[in-house]
Length: 510
Image 1 (cartoon, one colour):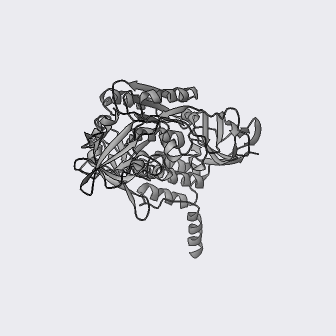
Image 2: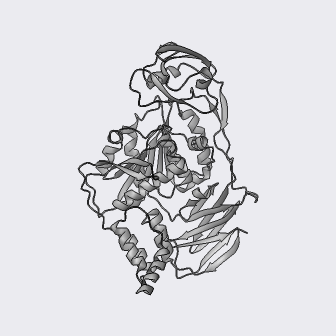
Image 3: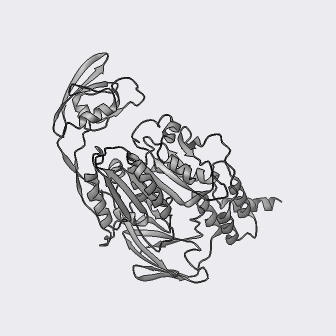
């Protein structure tokens, strides 16, 4: 008896299971993984065909849920469940990323925010889920912690509901639009297509001071929109970057609206088009050609290809291109964060931005209440935004604040227009061009030391040999078999019933 128990413990240690509360799905999968005589094909078919999800019995279609980030912090998010949800039917999931993620606190009243979202009526009609993640510093749409938080929320949703893995779409407005671009450029695996609205492709890169690679946009479909009068990300600045992205091979449709500022007032016109575009662009993880470039192995995977290790000592190939474009910094910013909990007249300063900025040079301090700009009253943030339209870089400016119940006038000058690179290349990166046809994989690498290929029954015939050619030299030719342990571990890591990889091979570039 002790011997059998020891064998079970050893076998179980080979499988990595999530620490979250175990679902019926996971419980049955663990039983199969531990059972003698259960084949890799049986495990594969069990996962692929699982359809025993619970009915939705909550009173409201909107739920505030929480993801445990660490021992002391939980991140809230809102999930909208359609009224006609059928647990026996795979259902699309829309991820909506909100703006203003530089705040210090998660947004207040997330249910109200979700209910007012213009995508909700369409999702109700279509019978789609919407996931509303909530972001704040440092859990934004473009840092590692924020991306992991988002991924864990998607996994939690897939565990509970019958989500169509190939119809998970990402969109968002302002920072949410910028975040949609960043996910596609760095971590696209979960998503079918991306819909950045009034965002800016460079934001995540500029904020994190980390590079992005335009050729990565080849692997998914993008539909982006900007507006003419947007003070933050005007169409005139975005259009040349979109043209460069298209030249780099991006699968991108770009559209503009005139006479509209930083607002989603075009929602009624565009959302039906966006929804139709989503329906026409499900995820295809088996596309026969891939290009992927990364500076960080955490962002090294795209579908069946993964860059595991970079070798910066190698000379880059001509096709690993860098795209340069200088953008003028004409934004009127003082360099302070707003206390969004302050509800009285004026704008309360939460904190001053780090480094050199106009606010610091003028002597603005945390707890100051801004009441005038250039002697014009400022009662709320929209007043300040309106007044900024009348000034330019290099202009002199005055701010009147209440400090210790006294009016204090501060004098300063906005910096002159500066220029910055739209696309950063400040980290060594590796890139791979890959293609497969009839069990033969042709890989071309640039500054890569180690990479992996993932295999699926929809891609290859396991009765035939797999051939891998690296930089025009054959490095592998043999039959491969499905790996039971890998199937279970990889599935439990991502909870993706469609991207159900059954084998992973790792190769070194000599």
